[in-house]
Length: 259
Ligand code: G
Ligand code: G
Ligand code: MN
Ligand code: NA
Image 1 (cartoon, helix red, strand yellow):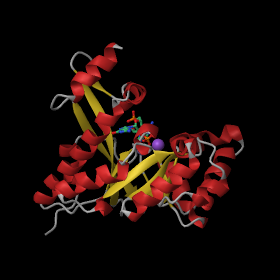
Image 2 (tube, helix red, strand yellow):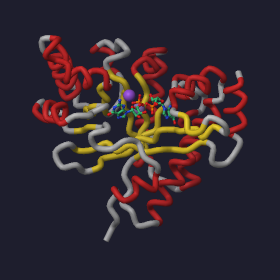
Image 3 (tube, rainbow, N blue to C red):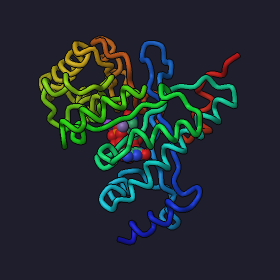
């Protein structure tokens, strides 16, 4: 409850909620394809807190409905800032919780903010988890279709952990899937598990590619994992091997400036 009160206060203040950004790269070339925005909370007493410490509280208390729009505005401001600095914009991915996805007028609210900042919807991507999508399948399909029609990119986060059936996946109007990092981590323990992790990851990549989806591997930490993924046609990766999530001023030097 104390955390909830502090979060409520923090959301009303400037600079308590920050965004760090983690690149998603083409593992062949190292080129940055997009960035994922990851919220951080500078708690007045506890310091910098990761999302695991406050997103669940925000979700259960309803504060997520304040936090979400704040994240979107910060991302828009960041994109504008980079544009003004002559940096070639890359799409930024924003995570949405269950409450956010099913919120009334979600798409219109996002569009209003983009209009205010004059930002192209193609520069935004939204990530929802498999379990969020499955909470209310028919609604999720309708909302995602609306978002897609509005020009946003969509991906299914933590893929493989939410028990989405294969037939269900083919009905979800997303552009891509992000293979959950637990599967990628297991690739390095495979000797003990008789190659099971490799079999599972290969099947997930195959499923995604055969459904014409972009496949991103999450939590890539080792060269062995990267090589395995490249050997099996998964080119997009995100993880500590390439970069930790970093504050915008540390991401900026990695982005290209236009001549
Ligand atoms: O950075 P970390 O691994 O602690 O992130 C934990 C979770 O918090 C991730 O699954 C991510 O989806 C979620 N998360 C991070 N930032 C945001 C945000 O701005 N909004 C929402 N809804 N979730 C976020
Ligand atoms: O669940 P979601 O994918 O939205 O959250 C991504 C989270 O995963 C981020 O909070 C980020 O800190 C974390 N993460 C990103 N790359 C790695 C990695 O290589 N290893 C580990 N352990 N965590 C990672
Ligand atoms: Mn994510
Ligand atoms: Na994830």
